[in-house]
Image (cartoon, rainbow, N blue to C red):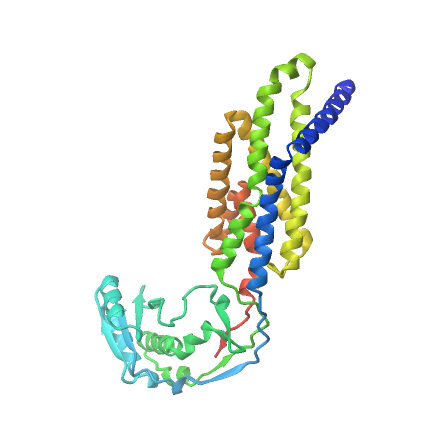
Length: 388
């Protein structure tokens, strides 16, 4: 066993020298193999430099005034379904000081509600009752209406040296006033006790906004896509070279007693070295140009290095199974793009954590998920809120 191990090490060393000599003789091919990831890295660095991140400074708390000051006479409130309970609740809603002059329309279905909302843009708000005690607000996502999502804190921008967060539109556009009136109506219908005056007497305060970096989510998606394809040239030449070498040297290896393990180990070590060097390069680019600001060099390097190793392993596996370089490249490219794009769901927070863990067995998904998480603080670090 010891002799076999020594034999494999000697063969691996000899094959390493042979591969490196071939790489040196084929300078044009090697230059192309290395130039693609270098160009991609420099492109990402230049893109980040031109669209330099601007940190929005801390904004102190702001007084939004009293809820009673809101005038809802221009609003159109559409609710569904129509029942005895929902009619009573919405009738009570009209007695709220902020809802005087508000048009309230009941419709039988959600389809009718959508149609009324469309014909009354931008002042229409929809109310969908799930039962007597719960409801949902619905609004068309346009004309300055806020996004009704859990990660609303992320929707902040820097406008004229001031931080603006769409969360404050809940107060300005009447969402808070309408919800307060409906809640008071539900309480009164249920308990026969009016709390309208107490609920309407609240004051709104826009809480302190911590320093944050506004960023377009679509730009970050493009950045992750570039990262997914960063090792594409290494994958192409690795599959091509390994497939050709195995065909040419298979019989020679048998005659000379060369071990398969030495063959794979030599090619593996070559590309481990390549991946290591180019991962250092891209990590330096990302951290120095501040494409990602909240994560250090070591995390970025580890993420790229492990992702590159996984792709090389998949490439070697496909090269053995398919034995055709073109087919191997197509399968690995499809594997990378498909699972990498599925990983964008993590960026949009559309997958439960348990499913994320399961799908992380696919390296492109795990890589995209990792890139999404390392920059989450940059995208969402806007601790803004409305405190009644």
